[in-house]
Image 1: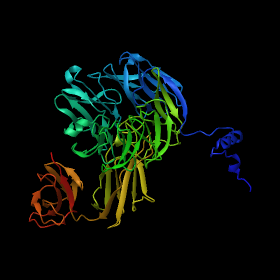
Image 2: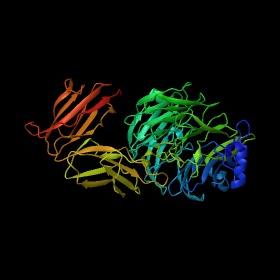
Image 3: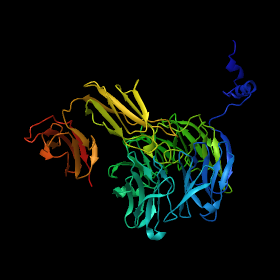
Image 4: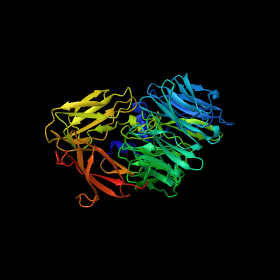
Length: 590
């Protein structure tokens, strides 16, 4: 019987080494295996912070020398592993760099300073701080740099959250007294809110939410918030995720209340969370597992390693999750929780894996004798998951920690029915002075053959809509680091002329605290009929009557779902339109 071509080269036991050798002879090259070390470069000192990656593929890592925290270097490596430049210990750097779109490097220091460096390592400016205990940075879409400083061991416990302009001038400061320790670096939500966890003397851990102008939005203090030990991650819907001593928490952005809490076996999450394009959250645990958690807090799957998982995962463009374990392996795991491959990196690693534009995976290796290396591993050819809202620690390899630059926030129209005529005004949240937006409008949810427009404006007025037809719209931001990612599609049915009131807040299905602020709009109405009920048929009323104006504050029973609607009336309380659509909200405890 005639042998096949493959059979002619197959060794007993299924070994295809002869085939590889044959390919080498014919093609003149050896195939590159996805789980092999490409190169490794020694860096002087202990590399205990995460790597950062510039848009030019420069790899940045801060190293600490034995003998004190003041002995630190900033190392810049080329993508081939050669040293580009090193800034010596006199700078007293610490932490993970944040890289701006123009290549500027922002980094904290033990010298009570925050530095801005150009891509060659030259200092652009420095900013003095109140303490040597600084957080890493978050970078807003307009270039504002946010970070915090403070400790009970320094400057009598006074802490500051800083907003610094790109030229190094102070934008604003937010003062916090009796700071024991700052637990997380700042993270920026889709509406520009800055979130940071701060441990106060005698009060425990408080989650602060600050408006972009530096004013207080809210401060949350719940017992379970005290477990948070790792940096935050934020979803497109604004939900805040955090890990710590009692597993993974999901936190409501409206008020800081806990939406749900998921426990690992040992109730101890050891990494920051990351989020994929489907909303699945991944987090490492003390119990040796990487967990995949559904958006409702249920466990989707877990992948067991040989030891604790201290490396925050990184999600690749094909959905593969890369992470390291203290069992000395870097793992590639599919979105379904199955092992694709592993690579022995000969040491425990804390740094989240970083992926280059060619798919090379970078991490840190520790060898006996106190030697640290930046190592490059041949990957699968994938890059970072740019369609995921928070695919790695700090959201991207530049560590901007800003979900706002990922997707803009639509403002209007967000209600199902639009009563404008003859044109419709679309608008969305401004994300930065230099942002360029991509607007799309279609008559189908798949956005086939959409109307598109690109520009720096945050609104657009369009006409020619057909009465009663449904339309869909979305918007994206052009980014130097990621492909455009569109906001959640908004849909509406066009109606003209005005016939009924439009409800503005709260959003349908929102969780709210007392007193509840209800607001609506309808031009020309003196009063409105308002109904609030505990059933959608409006038979069990909390309130049924008339109010002046377009808003009201009302105290409702806690932990109750309400349905409400408004209708415009004239001075004689005769309807001049019709009821609005029925909306619902749920009250939560204070």
